[in-house]
Length: 106
Image 1 (cartoon, rainbow, N blue to C red):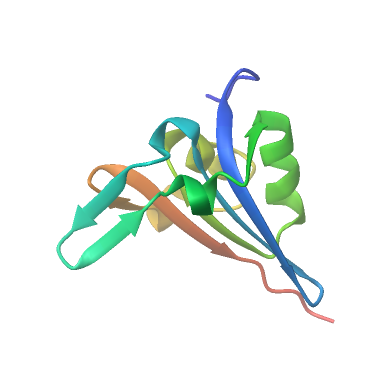
Image 2: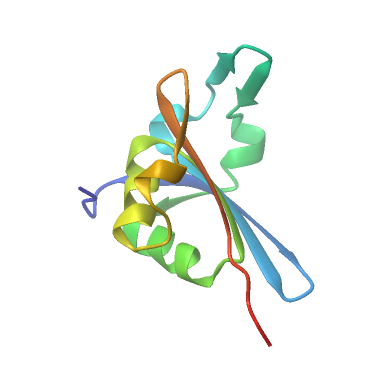
């Protein structure tokens, strides 16, 4: 599954008390995925705010309220952490895409 030498491209956005993360497997940066009318651009400008390893990716997944994930490795990490199920994963051009929204009760 996920090894420590894996890298991911990540962007974090904070608003109010929430943290949104967008993370993709580093090898996907610069690609554009097309499926019908759906176009997903994995631009360096957007996704590669920083390059992170698996430990930082896991930490961000734990802390975030919203996660946009693209790629086999980052999606597998989220599933292995119990944050989503395989049935929730969509594929665009064969590449896994997963959105996670965490709802908190006060």
